[in-house]
Image (cartoon, rainbow over all chains, first blue to last red):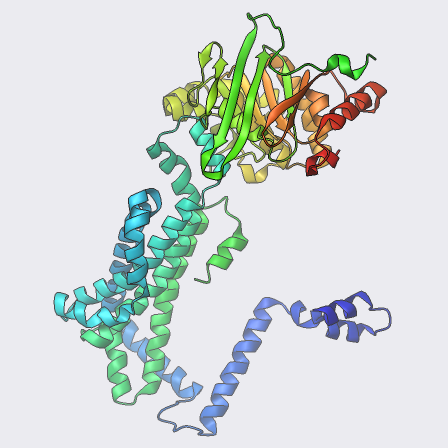
Length: 290
Length: 277
């Protein structure tokens, strides 16, 4: 830090190139799309190199070419309504329903925890304890309770996804501006009015941060449920492909699951942008990493 | 100019005619038992109709606590506050309050923010019926045409003007201002002080303002209450008899300077706020 600062305040003795180099600015000046493409290409090249040199068996680590070929084939299977299309549809339904239940139950519990002293004092400790458990370990329990069908996967998706919604909703209700709260008090606002007209709207950025995390987590939950509890979703297809050492197919299916997660995340982010027109986009982006 | 001592009067001992009295506070004390802190001790004062009273004092002198008790937001430990002859036991419609931050709801337009107190107290229909009043208030503070603008499109000074309108919409008998322009830059702040003077005069408002800027306190006030800390009490009352309307140029006159010096002299110099202008 001090070295860099020193260089930056004494540029007179340095050439332009040196100044740029020392202040590290040339790399910051590269436009974002170009740096993304360059970094992506570098990683692809590294992958290709590792696969080509056969540091590990070609079967265990297929190169980019095989993987993209498989991506194309699985894509054709999905578009033409093959068995992967059925699997993708099953997983999508599990993810969407799991996310929906997580959003609703997480929001309701979050309001209870954030608004009531009992919720804060009694419910929250249990939620924290429950959250600390490895939630994935519950998958066999849900399979035992809800069977090998989609239900156990929906429950698993919901179970993993609803904690961030609870915590963020409660945190959002607590983060309300104290002066504004005092203003509402001075207007003799009752509890319901304060909740509806002040606390919930100002908690929305937090709630959306929780929902965006939940969108990603619900994909995790559904796939974990499918790994452990069978069914016909993409998770099961991945498990079968891995067992038959079709790693290229595993990669291809992971890409499609990633697209599913991204689409859901994007839909939530889009709704946030539409709804929270007053909210600063920088916070939007920082929270968007969840 | 008369000697400053002539302006000094002990708090609570002011013999005033009762008829135009808006607020009467007698022997008000506040103790925070949990912190074993006596925030206020034996505060007595009266606010007459149409007057502007500034309260100044070092940090921790209880000036904000006094304002919150007057607003009915926190209870006093002992003593009494009468507003228009009725004891203040909680928030009331005839009390208007404003904070350092505009505390506007960012998802509401200016006019929706102004109408919020009506909406909370009497419902959306009553607020709708008051829309014309809200527009007139926005015009009064110089925000004509900004009624459908959201707060993030307003400057800090404009946002505080909307907050002024929101405070005025219920037609309060007393305006309580807690460092209302403390978050604004110096130029905007001076301008807002002139504006506030104009608005208060046009509305014939009774105003009680907490500040820690001495020139601001003197510029706006008919009376400056100087508070001292631990325990918080009114140490001096300085009458400001400068003619109105006051302009910013007036702040360079020797009379103004003498009053500022006098107030500063009476502030407890051992604390942080005492040394500040």
